[in-house]
Amino acid sequence: RYVRQLQRLQLLFSPTAADARGARQFVEEAAQDFARQHPDVVLYVSPRSGPGPAPVLRAEYLNGTVREELIASKTSEEIVQLATKLANQSGLDIIRIRKPFHTDNPSIQGQWHPLTNKPSILTIQGPHLQPQ
Amino acid sequence: RRSEKPNWDYHAEIQAFSHRVQENFSLELLKTAFVNPCYIESEEARRRQLGLDKDAVALQLQDNTGLAERGLRFARAYLAQCFEGAYPELPAKGIEALVNFLTSQELVSYVAQNLSIQDLTLCRDFPAPPDVLQRTFLAVIGALLESSGPERTGIFVRDFFIPQLIGKDLFEIWEVVNPMGLLVEELTKRNISAPEPRITRQLGVSTVLPVYFVGLYCDKKILAEGPGETLLAAEEEAARVALRKLYGYTENRRPWDYSKPKQGLAAEKAISSN
Image 1 (cartoon, rainbow over the protein chains, first blue to last red):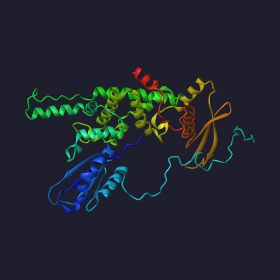
Image 2: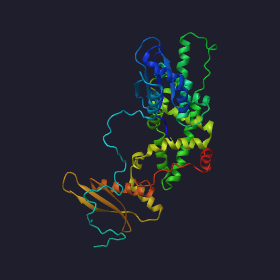
Image 3: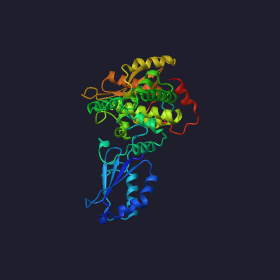
Image 4: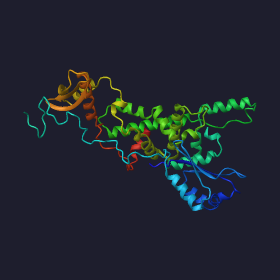
């Protein structure tokens, strides 16, 4: 079954700073809808008073990684899109993936080794092989 | 500890946990499932240290040992039944080895860590030791058993434990000391004559790294073939390959069936056999 990898989102913003306007609009309008649509993510809204550091959206994942995204001077829709993007991610590090494919069964009929198609010492009885 | 950092709401976290796993829990059972006995002792010790009267502020928490036992019994019975259905040839010792591996401390604590159970447990030490995580996860399974019934718990156990077997070989999990003896027993049970080992191919006999392919033949029909460094090692490997083929646990077997179960008889049998 699918287990969403996002554990909780913490929205840290200041109620007076100018660049947190999008964050305040998000909290007023869209935060409740977002929380209802994603019942398995805990959304914490913590306003911190006074001119502090820039408003930030912190995402914690099940494997422990914490990702912070700046939301200064972003509109409410952009923050919604950002939050859904974070909700659909997993907590793996965002690094370059070396190859876009991976298999656990690299060979189906058995990997070739230097003895695959050589005739053996004994005769093998099979549907097509004749004893020599 | 995460519960001591800012922004932590226990009730909301527990609700989110039940949604994440897509199961309906009764919240009180779930909360008791996360309480460990070491937490109760440490809380009582702390209260005594702070000088509070014991009767005034009594801890009314029950710990999770009962739920954990029930969860463990159900999980073992259900997994044993799954394997008996999927690999009917596998002997009882093999099934026991598989079930023991799946309910071992490391595996269960690994699954619990990746489901954020280590944040929700109430226990004395931090980070939570693996046996505490194992007990908590089994108690969660027990709580689910009480809340939703054996069918849904069976599906839950299947979805979270059986994918841990992907990519694992039978003899990595089940230690077999004498595969040749076991093979001879299995063949006598099926009334096939004893296997006869013959060298099929060999490479580099007089070098440091020889490779021998020994094939096991019954009535001059091939049973299995295995490589090895010395003749004895190759014979043992061929016996293991033959056992894998007989028990149906080869690498190219059908993958596990995760479709919705139609009958409720299977889970009820698991409960009645406890």
